[in-house]
Image 1 (tube, rainbow, N blue to C red):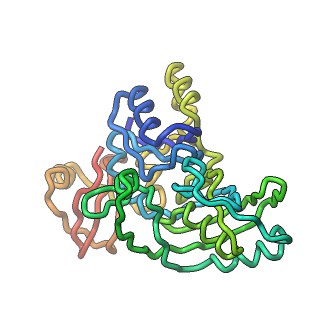
Image 2: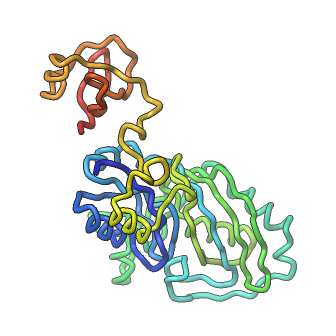
Amino acid sequence: MDAIILVNKPKECTSHDVVYKVKKIFNEKVGHTGTLDPNATGVLPLLIGKATQCSKYLINHDKKYKVTLEFGKKTTTADSEGEVIEEKELQQGMFDEEIINNALKLCIGKQMQTPPIYSAIKVNGKKLYEYARKGQEVKIEPREITIYDLKLIKIMPEKKQIQFETSCSKGTYIRSLCETIAEKLNTIGYMKELERMQVGNFKLEDTITIEELQKYYDQNKLDELQEKSIITIEKFFSNNLAIELNDKKLELFLNGVKLTENYPDGIYKIYNNEKFIGTGIIQGNLLKRDIIL
């Protein structure tokens, strides 16, 4: 199979665990476009077979999350996985809806964000969490991110928690965002729960669980999922224009020869005798091969 599968990642399971399970089902090369923390759930696009070549077109996608933020505690990892290292009494009236909404508004827009020390970002060839586990200090450079929207869903004062939705750019750490929101409210906090609701155009309602995927595969009914959870390479590029190549041009194209085509620069679906071959890229009126089935 050469396709993108939208999996709903369960809790207490790493992204690598999900990749391993799907690899066992299909006995194909499997990759993903961005990890989710073990305690996080939600949309995890997996690339199967030759669809792994689509990863370069997926890594810059914006994302949408549903988040539960708990106030009054700070943890080593900025989420529920870490140890509590600080506690703070909450101010009376802090859970006023207007006060919280004002704090959320202050966090919207372009900004520099410092990733958490417990993350997989590499500094000098080592992942940040490797430094953290050894108690070593390392300079973490802030990165520009964009918070497009923050919407308050629920206030739960008895649990010292709020729930909100956020749309954000690639590279945003929601754990760091939670700490920033807490700071705006003059307190501390950590990310209690996280659900990824959307990656680019891939939505939570279009996902499938590993158990469901195994069941459909065992019953040889994967075609029933094509419109929902399994996206072919041709469908992924459905909004791109198509170019039909004759047999002679196709042979040259597949052998890596650049073809002269009078079209604007961009990515094109390539067909031969109405059969989808893959994609090509035009640059300066020259068409070169990209993803080939």
